[in-house]
Image (cartoon, rainbow, N blue to C red; front, side, top):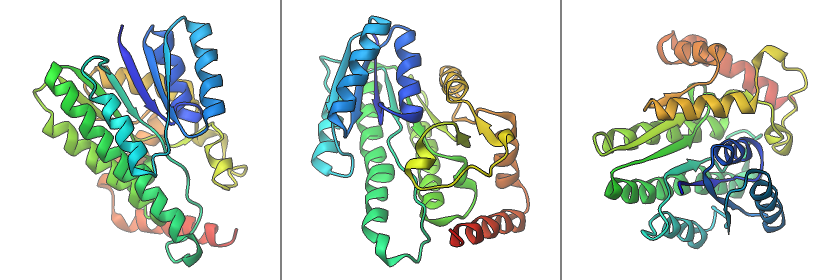
Length: 258
């Protein structure tokens, strides 16, 4: 039976990945900090879809926990065919906020270092078998300049492409996922007021995940799930940087008011 390991697999985009992969008949390895929620979600998905769901409690800001997950990815007796590097959280502070240095450092640990370590572990194991898929969740925020979150997600995007190129020709395929605003609890948990955003910017998480998995199976290096966000990323990548900087100024100014 094919297994998929999902970090941050009990909420938001990670939970939607877990649902879709389980619906396809994949066994799951769910990684999250909240053990009670982890076991509840595992029981729910196992009962609903009839798959085996393994739980792996881990705080990805703690190096020993990250290495525990890496060891699971490299266990030859229990191969993992899909790694969804999804765990993360929002940052609603400026790069000048002294009081949030510890939080910013944790963000680097969870959304950069853990992604790097787990991507490498999965890449080595999958390369040895000659097949596998890795999806690294970056963000459309990677094309703009709003605080440390944009910088972190720009790193994740670049890393994902670098890993894809390094594994080219091995049978292992890596896809960077660049979602925009997704209808989950992610923004509320980060203290971000998204109530004023127009409905057109939002993406349904089920649609996002379905497209991401399809793109990964087509061996695409990046997946952007909606034409509006594909256009935005194209403009950010290829348009005048003055436009991107002005949009970033507006978003930063709005953040300072809250």
